[in-house]
Image 1 (cartoon, rainbow, N blue to C red):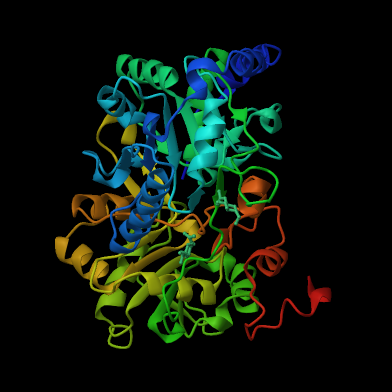
Image 2 (spheres, rainbow, N blue to C red; image 1 turned 60 degrees about the vertical axis):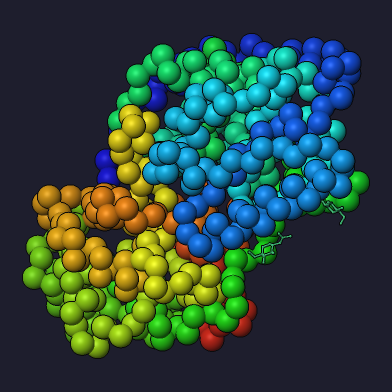
Length: 486
Ligand SMILES: *[C@@H]1O[C@H](CO)[C@@H](O)[C@H](O)[C@H]1NC(C)=O
Ligand SMILES: *[C@@H]1O[C@H](CO)[C@@H](O)[C@H](O)[C@H]1NC(C)=O
């Protein structure tokens, strides 16, 4: 997709211009010294919790566990319970996960004594006593944007190649470690959000986009790195938060026979990308088919009678979906995964993850991106390169709706998202799927993940990526054991 074409040079110029203006530092000193007095008596009731929850029974259960845990801890502290908002319960469930559009509405409901907004995901572990103590050290009458800092090693596609020069010094929060905004900052951001118009734009990596919005090209504030927002709960660090790094699984993995993998390829890649699939994850997949514009019995490929398009591939995608639904050998397989020929995926981890989902609900799962969410309309979609997971019920409803491509070269993953959006079917986000290469994500972020997929061979060694990030020892493939091959 040609979505990386937007001009970020303006941002770059502003960023360089503001490099020496260390607003964040000044505020940190002032804030910390003037703490005490009023802010030292902060209570849990003055913190408003916002949970990145999702509308799916497994995820709702996870969010409820987190809520119960926080409420139990506040009871233990003998403090009035904080208010806890689940984003999936707000009025715009499609766009609420991008937070900024619903800030004005949240701000309008806050009680007079409310001092902080604390944001977290299902994976966040919260130590409430430490969190209250930590936040009380920052004067909430000032603007604060606090979090566990991430930074890019180099300019990356998932951040639209922002700041070619200064990308490594721009900090953005690791959402899974939790992050906080002082109420005065929330109030100002809400007013600003309401007063400005918003572009039809992509939401790709929200944590980076939120930090850019708050920084506002130097007119706003930077993230203040707070070491007590932890990813690993190291003793002695006084962690107020940590990330639950357990791989999400809910009992026995789904049998691999129950998962069908559809690989989209074309003639041009039969001899370089397809062999890599077979060297890595392909042998793990019990049901796998390659779809191409050209028949090649050595793979073998299946041609669908759809001409190949340079980009988009919507026609091919829908032909694959129809085949999955009508071909007698495939009809009984409960799970369907659509990947590119340059997607690398861990089959056993995927099978373990799927144990958390009910096959009766329509499931549409992977790495979620958004389009046009800031204008009030818009929709979410599972970005294709990381792998799109559907179950039978999702596929059935999709095909029954008659929703289809505007043209053969329309962007397939986005059209699929639009269709599921119009059907009211939730896009389920799993951060373990990746549209890009490991190099494109912050090291600190990947450090607390057990990834399921990566995508693209460009400027990287796919076998090495697979062995380093996706290979699990219990697998039969031995490509990663004979390291000299890499
Ligand atoms: C970190 O571990 C300690 C000791 O087990 C525990 O008391 C604390 O609540 C943990 N912190 C977080 C944020 O999970
Ligand atoms: C951590 O996540 C796992 C897997 O999702 C879950 O079973 C477990 O209860 C979580 N642990 C805590 C302390 O929340």
